[in-house]
Image 1 (cartoon, rainbow, N blue to C red):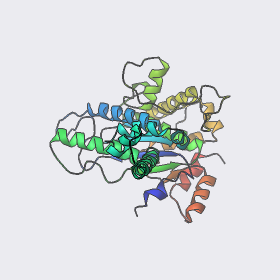
Image 2: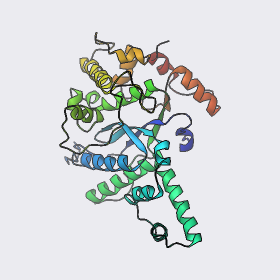
Image 3: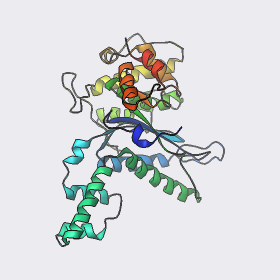
Image 4: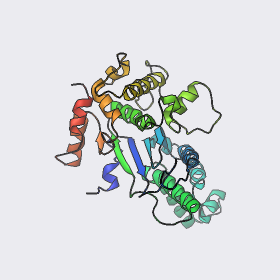
Amino acid sequence: MTQPRKTLIDLNQTSYYHCIARCVRRAFLCGEDAFSGKNYEHRKDWVVERLSLLADTFAIDVASYAIMSNHYHLVLRVDIEKAEQWSEANVIRRWKRLYKIPLIVNRYLKGNASPALTQMAQELITKWRQRLTDISWFMRCLNEYLARKANLEDQCTGRFWEGRFKSQALLDEAAVVTAMAYVDLNPIRANLASTPEDSDYTSVKQRIRNEDKDSSSRNVKLMKLTQSSNKTHRHGFNVTEADYLELVDYSGRAIRCDKRGYIPSDLPPILERLNLEPDGFLELMQRDDNIAGLRAVGSPSALTHLLDSLDQRFIKGVGISNRLYSS
């Protein structure tokens, strides 16, 4: 049964979420449609450009992304504190990038508004500030834009996306890293790339390119990882850029080996630090259906806490959690 979005995205539980949007029927977001012979590869640039704008506009960090032929993945983090520090003028400037600003707000900015109009303008600004921290609004601004642009190019109307986007709560640091790696490895799992650095339109390729100081193409503003294992990210995220890239490379080699249960001998230290089982981790990385359908990813204790808060007795993914986390 479909769950209300407010029960699926609860910032009291976590600020990190894995989101997936998929095209309806035979619609193609990007890539080449073998049925019609049409090539939609240029649409991937649409996604990157729009995602770049939204990452600069919302108080929502993009930790990871992958753009595939008929769907895309995002790992997002909501930064409430950041939005609370914005001035009213800053909120208006950001909202204006996406929508037209009512006349009363312009009059309020110029100091020409009556007390009644001032109150109305302030209420609007408060609403916009809240929306700029809302994942549903982030996804709406991305999906509606892409749907209109694609339908215009295809000279058709109607639904472009397969219902609502899917969201998955990431309940701890290990779950966030697991989801980020899962997203970045999509092209390798689909046999579209052999290495992370060859995985076009992914955040891992962008991170590698940034390491090489190559910024020739437009980038999405990604959530920064820590530069040293002795430092903790201001959001409590203690994973370095080097550790993460090593983990994705390790996982990609295991996927390419294509042997069930194969684990490379050079286990990255990050797995032990995050209390993750190598075989359970690679099991998730190697199959498309292992993680995408879960409501939440986290340690067994984190899932138990989530169940208690929801007053539920069952949640899908407990078995996967037991295999993923070291006891």
